[in-house]
Image (cartoon, rainbow, N blue to C red; front, side, top):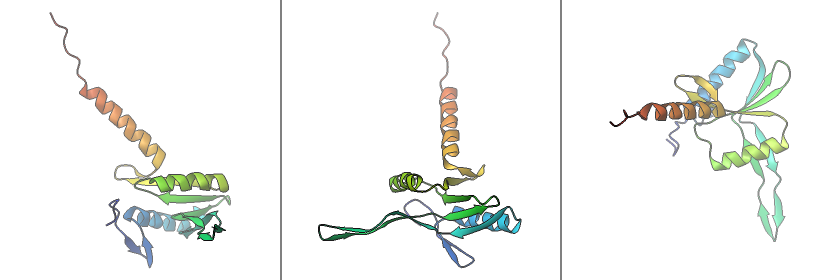
Length: 145
């Protein structure tokens, strides 16, 4: 187990960083077989910054490795990352990726009740649930006499 609680999973000879990621892989295989998507790639790499030398030091290139790249029937490409937690490093790489590439980057999470859902939508739903819970817990007291 990692520090984020994900379990490394092997499926079809591929290593996935989490059980959710392997489940999404199975979903993509089904979509391809059902001819809902053209194709998909595992672990595509996107260059964010070339390596360079400065003051005699070699600075390595910066890459973003997504979980999947999906080619849809209309020819559009969607980059997909399955996340349980959005780290600060990922948030920076996401901004960098959005600046450099035209592809749509979808960050999705797996929820036991909802299945796969975009991370931003899941966060909104959780905030709403917390607000509702807070409203319910506040009781109005009867007026004093």
